[in-house]
Image (cartoon, rainbow over all chains, first blue to last red):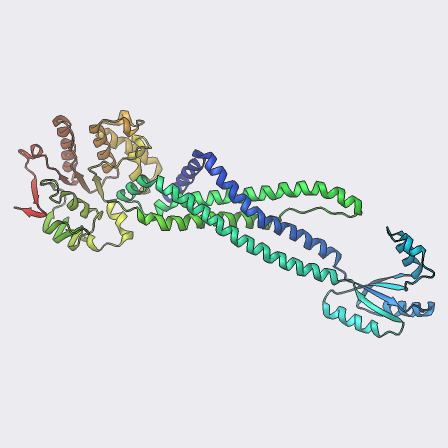
Length: 303
Length: 217
């Protein structure tokens, strides 16, 4: 019994493959359309994942800048160093003297004229502090403590841009979700129509099969296989489009990264995400076929 | 085996095809249904395979009430029946072999035995040499025989034929009637609708004659 059932599924699977390849241009076109539609949200998702991992690397130890008062003496600096060393919340810190800061400023492009015209160094001494933990509460607490030290003029978070980036990523995720929803509906509609046309051309076969005693699931099966196989092929196409785009972009990025002395290259979809993409696209194809079959098969009743 | 009780069939346009029919066909019996075209012969046969549903009355086949069969159960009823349609209903995009194969695919038979069964059925109707041909290349008599092969390949207990000798020469018609007789002889219940009076001369089988939707004595 189970063997007969398996044989039947194998048979339908090969029959469906034959159908797909019997109209190669039509099949190819609808697979490409589905692939492009899927590659849009999936591609944006990949870019966002990359952006997130870059921001995650930089923001893993959040930075704070302590600016000392302009008249701070050597003893003041030593005292702060000692306090920072004693604080368990702080991983590491780095002292940037006003002379070093001015030197760095002079090195920056376009600012040479301005720095040359300065009578005296307007920059304060500073510490760059790395905190142990990333949570906003702890950072805020640290800031409050350090702000109270008499030698400190100002404490500045350097994590503001990370927060902005996170907000942007959140917006991006929303855009991906919306795009994915809309394009999924489009894919279901494409499959609905493809199957509708197939049902019309197979009208005789369906009617005769019903007359001979075919169950509804027997008649449905090849159409559902067709939808699933085409959906899966659409997913593979989307995956390939993204892989190709990332490969091309990485070549361009190498140059850019060299200019900034920064290791920058995009990652492809993770294996888990790839499998999710394929399963989801197959499911979309199946769903479109299922809806189409449900709304058209009952119209074909033998007389 | 087949019982009709007070069965009427009225089509949606108001046409009454069958009017209060009572009849019984025993298991293993061979019965002819005659009458002019429009007398309700086709409707009677279609009711047995649940292709049409009666407006009123009960139809039982092997104790099962066909009139109240759920849609999901209809396929299993039809698998017990071999139906030879008036308009053949062959699939013109596949060859003779594949046409006969269809009922076996539907009934999920074991794949190994299937080809042998198809050839046995084709052999019985004399089409074994044409298994690769497309139905479009067959003559009228050959198409009729192909229909018979498809109707018997899954070994149904009931065989129903609607005008099986419709447009055939007398000689072809006689061949086909001989085939039905051979199925009857191995115990199959056979119902044949025909308006061809020459088929019914000196037959010892029961003849039901329909007249305007009613059974004449």
